[in-house]
Image 1 (cartoon, rainbow, N blue to C red):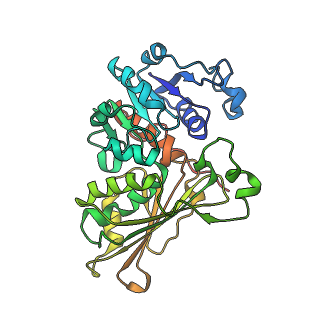
Image 2: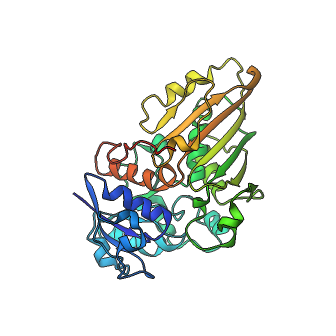
Image 3: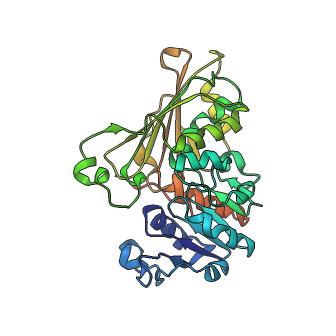
Length: 343
């Protein structure tokens, strides 16, 4: 049994990670930390866990965490910088759900996150944990940087086009919408029910923290730096991301439906829907699946890709478990084969 520690499990990604770990047949959480809630039973904070665990939150302690086989960080940015190095030096593997190790350039990270990078010496060891492009590197990784939610939806949607060099990479557009849980569990006016319900708005148009992560990964896929307009929006719902992606074909004769079906044929968590489909966020709620549909309106040279994920699962905690499975030689789908909840 894989012994797992979870640092900072009081947020939405934290409880989703615990839900998945507690139902995982080959892994179990043995240490769950929170400075502000030490001594409180997990089930007291998260009633959905009642009857599934007797664990209580404890103060972060590097010694106890180092006894784990793997430690997850479900923390705000900057926290993993302080603990990851010590855990790695003691042989514990680290899966970080924050943005701390996603960007390869520490100065770029500092500009977008407003503070110096706390562990630049670890960046070379970090593997970007998107299995659909880095599956070969993940099993031997010591440190995984789990992709962000918007980047997961956007990158998976663009990969087939960029890998084959079929679009103008200088004119990519990602129009993405997220449920309110993407903002986290902290109290803030903008995510109060009366503020977020019955309305719809864009935000971060001049620049969003996920933009450099998306650009970095698309450049890896395309072999050149792309030009991307990325506009996120806040939807009045709890879970889900819908990304509508636009690109201009360089070869109008391309069969884009066949391209996507071929690229993702063997991917367990990417579902390319039949031609003409319109995937819904509710069809992936609670699952680790990304559903894609590809269109060419009026048979023109514009490709429209529709990409939906659950931001807390494939966009965070489920993808973390997918990486865990690959790191420890398990079937990639272990603990992740649940069916979406409807309605």
